[in-house]
Length: 277
Length: 277
Image (cartoon, rainbow over all chains, first blue to last red; front, side, top):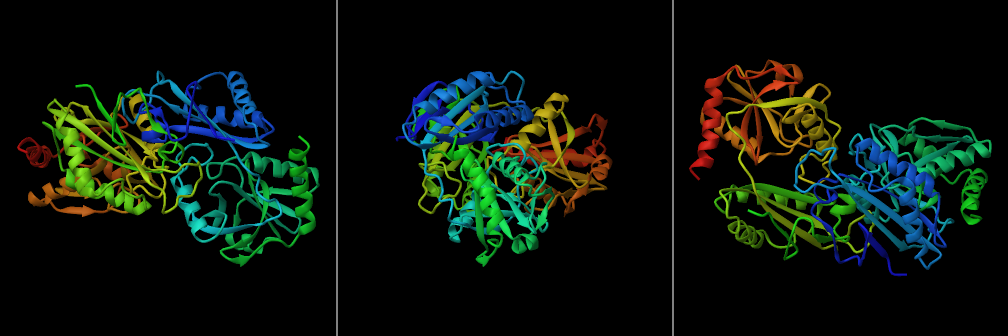
C-alpha cells in the first residue's frame, strides 16, 4: 500500500509540502509523538500508546489538538484505510507559534501529524546484532519527543557496522537502545533499567515484564553494566514495532543465547498475544 | 516588512504548507541552523556564521544543499529584499529521506530553509534579568542543531518568571544560556566557559573576547560557578541577535553592574563595530 500522510485534517504525499513554518517541530523539536503496530486495519495496544502520548504532551504542557477519545476515533479511521496485513501508525503533535521564539505560551495551539505505512514484522527467529554507543542524550529521555539526533547518530553508526541496534551506555551502565529498550536474563532473573529520566517507558518493555511475571520469572528493575550485558544468558530488545527479539552479538562478540528455554517462553507469550489478537 | 519564507527554492507565507514529511527536522531534529543580524539589507558577520553552519553540517555529515559561496550569494540576495533597517536572517538544513528511519545514509540529500524577518535591536541600555535552570541538555551543545527542547523549556520558565534569559547550570557550574552565551567580569578579568561539548561557540562570545583583548582586559576561558556569577562585577550576555548586553539580576537578586567603566568600554567596542558597519 502507498503510505498515507495526514496533517491537520488533510491528506498529502510524502514529498509534498505539507507542514507550515509555524510547526515548532521544524525549528525547536518542540514536539512529541507515539507509534504502534496496525494489524488488519486495527492499531495494536492503542490505548497504552494514547495514554503515553497524552502524558508526553502534559509533561511539556503542549495543548492537545483534540480530546483523547476524538483522536482515538480519528486514528482508528485512518488505520482502517490501510489495506495490508501489517502497518505502522505514527502520530505527532507539535506546538504552533506564528513567530520563531524560544519560549512557548499557554495560548500556543498545536498541529497534528499522522502517517500510516505498510511494514513487515521483523523475523522473530533472527537475533539482533548490537553495538555500544556513548549515551550523550539529554535528561528528558522519559518523554517521547522528536529531539532524536543522538539516536540518529547511534543508529547510523550501528548500520555502518552491520548491526541492527545501538545500546546506549552511560558511565559504564546500560540505559536503553537508540530506538528500543533492552533487558537481560541472568540465572533466570530479568534485569531491566528502572523507569526515570534515563529511559523511555516502553510499552514493549512493559509487555516483557508482564510476560515474565506471568511465567514466574522474577523481574529486577535496576541498571546493569556493560559487563553484565556481555555475561547475560539472554538479551531482549523490545519496541512497539519489533515487539520482543533476542540479541546474539555485542560489538561482534557472541552474547546471550544461553537460556533458550526461558527465551522461547517469554517470546512465545508476547507474540502469542499479538498473533491471536 | 512581511517576513520572507523560503524553502528549497520557493517562497511561502508562514502559515502555508511548505515543508514535506521527508524533511528530517520534523521527525528527528536531524537538522542544523545558523542565524545573524541584517542591517540595511546586508547580513552582519555572515562569513563567520556560514563557516559555523558548514562545520555543523560536517560534524553530522549532513550533505550541504549547495556550496558555501553559492549559499552566500543566495542569502545576500534574499537579505536585499528586506526593506527595513534591521532584520534577522535564519537558515537551516535538514537531512532528507523518503522513509522515516532513524539511521541516515551517505545518499541522503538535504533541504534548505531560509527566513528573513524584521526585528528591533534590544535596548542596549536595559540590563537583562536572569534565572537559573538545570542544564539537562545533551552532549552536542557545540553543534548548532534544532534539538532545542531544553532551551524551549528554560526560556518558557524565564518568561513565566518575568525574566529575559535562563542560565544553564550543570553540577554547580554555569555553562551558557538558553539562547546566548554568558561571561562575567571579576576584578577586571573576563571569565567565560571554554569551548567544548557543553556550549555553543558563539560568534557574539568571540566578539566579546576580541573586544576585551583589544581593551587589554585579560580573558580566562574556564567554567565559573553560580557563586561566582552572583559575585561578578559585571555579567555579559552575548548572542548574534543581542550582540552584547549586561545583566543586573539573577533569580531576582541584584547581580553585576559593579564595573560600569569596563562594561561601557566593552559594549562600546562591540556596538561601535556594528553601528559603523
